[in-house]
Image (cartoon, rainbow, N blue to C red; front, side, top):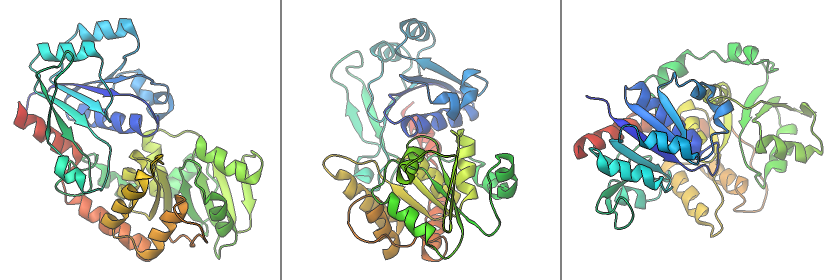
Length: 362
């Protein structure tokens, strides 16, 4: 198959999630021989998320679409075969105009991830463009999802092989993360969950030693606020806490692989936690109209979450008041995650499906 020029546009709202998804997509396409330009309005997080982005050796050209000179230079280059607007952002009009001058095989609106029923109905549908430089063309909705009737999830071809080879003892030692063999390892990547203080108390009072690995940024700030200070470590009862630096995408995956329970947030980390195969708790991005309640419950339904896991999610996300159940690393929580991963592995990944769609429209 002849390689194509892909232009992916990403407007950074949550630099971990939006940019994380688009960078993984760009990297996977480039690894398959496609030519990729990633247009972003804020590349700051790539400095730690993907430091290789500066060199271009990964096959992805990063363009600041707010830089007029960079925009002019990019538009003067080859017209894209595929134009992807991620999460409803509006690509630069100049790039759309250039797209119309080329072969223009596909214009894709890459949507947010959801398990709600509408995703299956809308995935792949056309959306005619009536205004602007792209007037007369047709976009196609591409919905990532958890069922065969959706666009699937990002998954590199060798991901599960790398997961199987992973040595967590070696990784923890290389990252100088203190850990005793009798400690459970839990990771925490979150916003400011309403039940965070309750979780820390439950772990501190728990029956077995637990080490909580807290990611940099809002998760660290939230945990330290619960303790009223910002030391490098915290110890309370059975709970030990280690604060991590910002991690590259590969090391974030390794963190999830190393832990027996992962607390994640947003979209990118949810998908990576599913591939990790350990029990997980998802803090969904809150919306003013409480639409996230419906979205979370739809995902819990798809997951087949047992009652204790469903209740934990509702408490963690502030849907209900009351006692927080003790988090589980074995039993039904683990079985549920492994079953979900098996179902997902039986489906084509997102990039495979996306390339098939583009091939059909060429």
